[in-house]
Amino acid sequence: MQIRTLSTLECTKLLTANRVGRLACAKNGQPYIVPFYYAHADNHLYAFSMLGKKIDWMRSNPLVCVQVDEHSADRGWRSVIVNGRYEELPDRIGHKVQLDHAWSLLSRHADWWEPGALKPATSSVADHLPHVFFRISIAEVSGREALNS
Amino acid sequence: MQIRTLSTLECTKLLTANRVGRLACAKNGQPYIVPFYYAHADNHLYAFSMLGKKIDWMRSNPLVCVQVDEHSADRGWRSVIVNGRYEELPDRIGHKVQLDHAWSLLSRHADWWEPGALKPATSSVADHLPHVFFRISIAEVSGREALNS
Image (cartoon, rainbow over all chains, first blue to last red; front, side, top):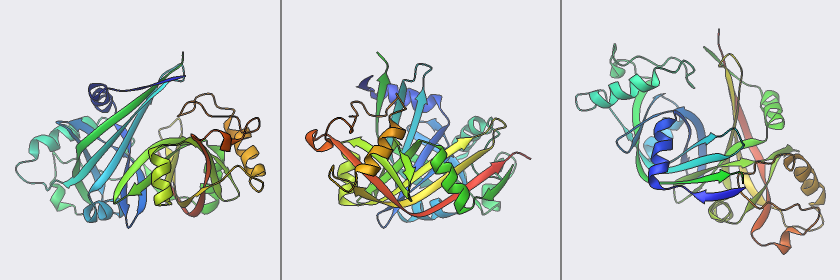
């Protein structure tokens, strides 16, 4: 098996082509990981979440890491790691385009990691307190590929 | 989709039945995630790694999080999260049993996330500085299941 480093462009393509990643945040030195659905656009990963531990933690420390991987039939794989910053997006004028874009991509998936995701196009996120629309601003991206030789 | 909390026993069974997880560590508030292979035994997750960023970070801050999930054909899923502590295991008398157990489980997989894993049964880990045998001592485990209803 040969390992090589992915270019920034290859990392970006992998992020765009996938929807499921793992998101890690940290509080007082303790990391926390959750699977999450995202949509990649404009150097950001957009996502919806219910309120809870990860939102609490990211509000107090916005430094996060996202990991996304994909696998090929010959047991090779690619893995991309994003270092980024959590940004909460209130449901107000200014984020409508991103909200609609993220929703259009994410709503194609029936198997949400968290239940009760709302359709923001028909109801205001702000009206439903448990839900948060946020994005990860990508500060740094890196990736590796393993090829069976 | 219905969500329910997994019991500790169900979480433990899921950890035992799987080999691939995501490991997160943190440094100065910045989390870092990598996919890793592990073997579960005696309330620990055993693993091998080359030296590098994650080992450096876990040596300076042993608090880690591991996430493991599995998926069913009907798009349901189970996800388990472990909070634990990194412990490095030198290749000396006292860890031979765990080393052999971990190796016997992990060596069945050809697709290591990192290349060049050694077979500890035939050569001393300490002779090959880039490789580390470690375990995550499980402090806390929790999990959720999503069922399509």
